[in-house]
Image (cartoon, rainbow, N blue to C red; front, side, top):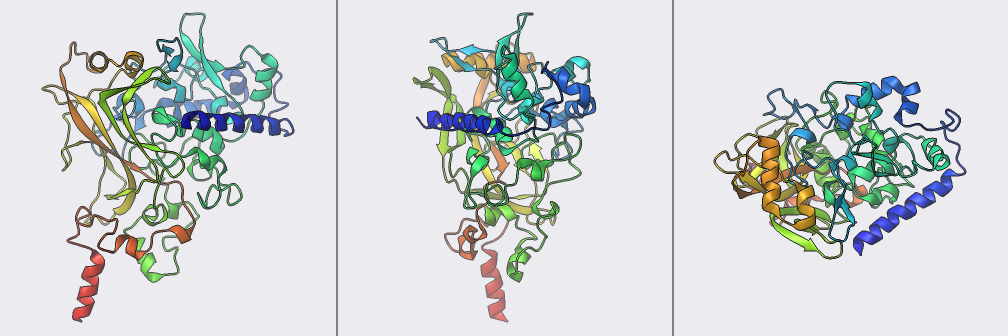
Length: 472
């Protein structure tokens, strides 16, 4: 019922938006008579198309200077393994049906800003025509998978047979809004707010008590207010993104032109900003409106009778308190075809922030710590993705793993075991008013939320300071 309510809200938002659009004059309303696909956009925006082709939103891989073990390789969703839907390889596009004949999955390309073809590194007219400009720039645009004359599948506007309706939608061109960004970024990972945890759909229209930056009646900031770069590049990467569009221009609160490095009136608080990131105090919890996926165990298939499909065992939580770790801007990734590296707790670190108390460039950050259970190739100790599109209808996990090992590693009848995994994901959104920020005793008390020893301290540093002053 929760999911029906959420999607009903999304539908209502779309309908109300379309009603408002009937009275609004859009900039592209008179630019073309009929929308003929991406070719219509490229007539005026050829350079923009070429820029977007090279971006992370289209390529899903790129230079990864902040991954310490990248070894100058281009990395991204297309050639790494994650602990959510595991990999787009073999799961890119398709109409997966359950036993009732209902479509239960359309593949990873559902969140790609293209029309169904895999992106290539070499630019071509075919690849430019594959860009779906409307998914980010047309208010009210919706698409679905349709069969092509060649016998394949492609993403097309749901109004592709309704020329008048499609023309109306295609002319509602805007810069990307919170709603258009969250359409993919909120729904990634298999469900509403499952993946990131801090990108809740409530941000589309929230009050200041939920987010002081994006509140509709407050600053009303859009995603691109902070993240927009040059030439369709996007600033920011958090912790667990492999390739990044603009690594030389990291996005920070004090580098955005909004806040300084000493934003407080209190000298003590400004002293903290040297080693404590803003997210620690100003985002006390996440998943406040929508539950987020905190653990996904692929070794335990779970059947859902309402949708007649299988998933991994997923643990959802709301109002989650972040974990805290040092981060200097660099990450170590667990990459395919490399023996697993285990953390102190024995789990495999899929994405692990680098830095320590002794690293003067590191700060303590707030993280979502996602736990997983993934297959590992025998003898080689390589992580294996899963053909999730094969698994969803029948719940048979072993053949889905062996098929994925064949796809990724060219290994037949792969033998495997199960390992626990850990992924650190930065928390940056959902900032409540300053009055709701953490206070001193939230961290500096016997039951405070900081694990000081894990952070490299012998104990609470405030106690050490007070004792030293008492001796004087």
